[in-house]
Image 1 (cartoon, one colour):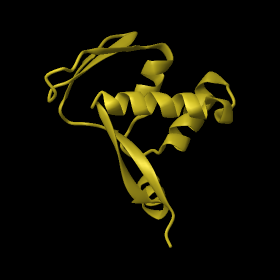
Image 2: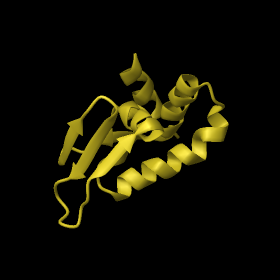
Image 3: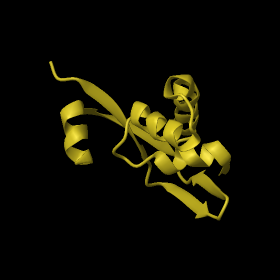
Image 4: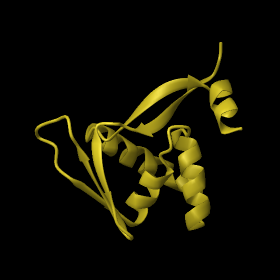
Length: 105
C-alpha cells in the first residue's frame, strides 16, 4: 500500500489583498463569508501554503523560520489550517508520498 498525505492549497474562489505586513482573504462563494485578516504567524502559515506541501512540511519550514521545535508547533498549525479550511479559503487533497516527493524535486 502506498503512503498517502494531505497537501494544502489556496482555493481559486477567493479575493486576496496583500499589504506589507498583512493579507486580507475573502471567500467569494459563500454568502456568509467574512474577510480574514492575517498578520504575524498567521501570515507566515498562509505564505507556506503552496499546493505542494503537507501539514508536516509547512510546520517544519515555520519551525525553522521562527527557530522553534516543530513538534511543539504541529497542533497549532493543524488547528489554523482547519480554521482556514472551515472559512473556505484553503482545501486539502490527498496524494501519494511518492507524488509529493516528485513534485518537490
